[in-house]
Length: 275
View (tube, rainbow, N blue to C red):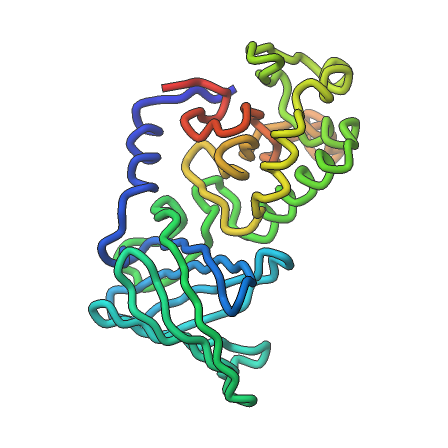
């Protein structure tokens, strides 16, 4: 298991700084409401030339919608693009620790108010400083495709919510330390995990997990986390058979669940270590 270090503490503090202005070359994450009650999450990646790349998604569906635009001081204009890259709607708003304004559909001219609160800054995604190129969010995990990480997170989340703990065990890097009745316990293998899983995933845990997106997760060198760190996902080295290799096997990095923490455990990192 990975252990918590002072470096992780520094990164975590950096993620949650109050944002007086958008941070360039970083993922600025927001969440809030559009219209009367539709929950959305929005990620902006400002570049040094005053342009913005990003996307947003409705919490109910978690399908990313591409946006691009410009910012100047506190003013932000974002164009929502369709699958062909054509502008179909526009966000116009003011940013001052929150982002609020009006969304307008280009075809119907329909307008909706939106109000988004600043959530976090993710500085550890792959941005090659000074290159002007936008890379993927989870490259610090040595994974170069956001969809791979988020699809895995979604599979793990679904297995937990369905109570399919045998399937979930296939996604876990053992041994793993969990919390049972407020006590930490090391689980050595899949069979042992399945026997105690109902004690790990309490009603409070399941409720929190239902409300936690698996899109645009917070990430650092240890991995990506669902919710406030209840589930941590990272890469682990595994030995797989390969008849073409001289030793008959090869080592590969695969995505696994590397930590399961109690609810409201953001101050715990991969491996369950506290600071």
